[in-house]
Each structure stands twice: as structure tokens, then as C-alpha cells.
Image (cartoon, rainbow, N blue to C red; front, top):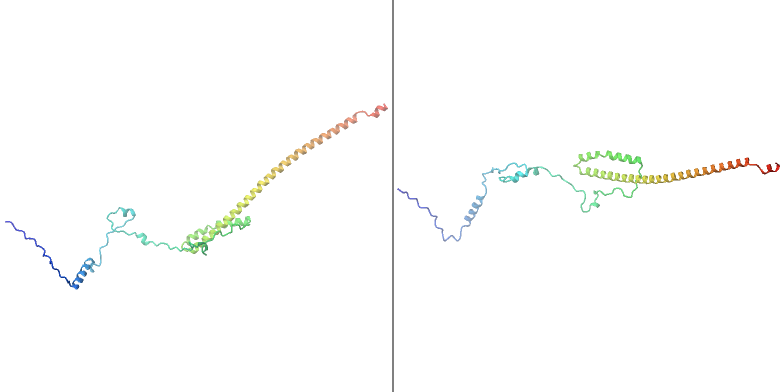
Length: 230
């Protein structure tokens, strides 16, 4: 025996003559029902956490295909340093906090003695402690600015002292060269005088010997009186 399958139920025929004037209240209820369907239920207070995992490097993030979202926690937790601009970028040279250079005029003369230069260089050697001070006060911009200004003055003073030392060294070198030339000329003059003195001594000795020989010859030769009385 064959069982006949039931006939499929057909949908009702649409109403070809819709209501030309629908009820406004019914339309408003339908809109509220449509909006409420897209919103989550108020009873669902604990939504499911997103599917996420830890990524240590950017390579892990790029190579992961099933990573829907990620967070860079290090950038969110670290605090950026706060800087304060003391120098005006536009009118910087007219600003009071701007460090004007050079601090010492280029045409200023530093007549320092050797002792003063030596003590100043010792002072520069002791200034190495300021590096430790700057590392300890890196968060105090005023202290860092003050130390940098002092360091700038020290470097400029050291440069001026070095220039003065080079100038003195150049002057002493020129004087030494001049004195060496003078010594060479005087040595040549002394050698020439010694040569002339030796020639004069030889000439004087020659005249002395000639005079003695003439006296000996005159004493040994007979005179005219001896011939007359003989």
C-alpha cells in the first residue's frame, strides 16, 4: 500500500486591496519591535569575552590568522615624559632663558699667568662631578639648564685659555727661532774675528822676526869709521 503525502500548504493569497489608512499607533509599535530585535537583551549583563590571546611580538600578530583583536599594553601603561620648552623657536635669541653665545667677547684679552692657567685647568678636571649631578637631577629642568650654562661657560673659558696658550707658544717659538738665527750670525762673526786675529798675530810675528834679523846683521857688519882708522 502506498501512503499519499499530504499536499503542501500554500500561503494565503495576499490582500490586493491594502488598508489605505493604517493605524499610526500600530506602526509605532512595529518600529519599536524592529529596533528592540537588534539590541541585546537587558537580562544578558555578562557578555562573552572576546577571543584574544597574548602576542609578544609584532611578528606573532602578523602571522596570526585567527586573532580578531589585540592590545598593545606596554604603550597604554607607560607614561610619556613631560617636557617644557624654555627656548622660543621663533624669537629664541631675544628670549631671557636662551643661552647667548659667546659668553666672552672674542676680542677680550685674557692676561692670565701660568699659575692662574694651571689652577683653572685643575678646576676643569674637578668639574667631572657635575656629570653625576646632572644624572641625579635629570627631572629638574631648571637645575639641568643651570648646569648646562655653567658647562658652556667652562668650555668657552677653556677654549679661550687654550687659544692664549697657543698664542704664547707661537710667540715663544718665533722668539726662539729669531734667537737661534742671531746666535748663528754671532758665531760666524766670532769665527771671522778669530781668523783676523790669527792673521794679525802671524803678521806681527813676521815683522818682529824681521826686525831682530836686521839688528843682528847691523851689529855684525864693519862700520865706515873702522875702515878710515885702519
